[in-house]
Image (cartoon, rainbow, N blue to C red; front, side):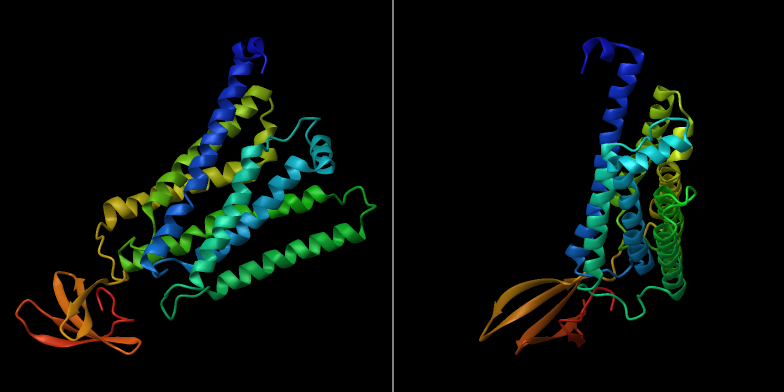
Length: 317
């Protein structure tokens, strides 16, 4: 980088934009790990909205295609300049890397819902299935029309990409609503990682800051409207993050996890190996029977009652 150029206001602004961009990338990318780690530690996805998970994967698939095309495709860049008075688009390398990384982590989290425990009624809702079917079908129709009428000047690939960006923008609103409602009905945020929200909020604020700074540096405010998904994604993320933080820290402060696995400590008891189960201040002793483990619960007064199978025993049951 030219030192003289770095010393100028515009050069410093470009450097600041890079710093903000990669900081938002780190914050937003890191926000996907707490939920995946929480699912792994609990061996359960109970308390997590299936609508959110599936919409997240579809949204970041659309966002990845949009950013990859805007950043790497000369044809898309040419079409963008033609529509925006010769100005370049404001998609940056950190935008591309974030979108692809988010798609990978969202898909991984979805795979956890196929492995770990969940409630019998914990599934993707019919309205979400319908929404996904309509949006994917719409993309297929635009793709088919672009292929059939490829010689038409009005038919351009950038229109398909903008359609995908609007899907992502719509999903950014819709995907959070089921989780907000789930927290509301359960009066709890257990199962939903607050660390995810704090990192997401940080990334959203910085993403908006970079977009505005880039527009100011280039003196082209149309760059913001030219990348509506980045602006909308940042605004919606910060708005819903504030809702989640209010739910977690103000409205629903009960942190008791009804779904967490029982803490089991193996102990040698006489002629057989047993299990000491610790939960909610009580003890339960279970002996091993074949591959299954039957347990009984001993309360503080010494009274005993059946505890069911150790495979299914969970806090709060």
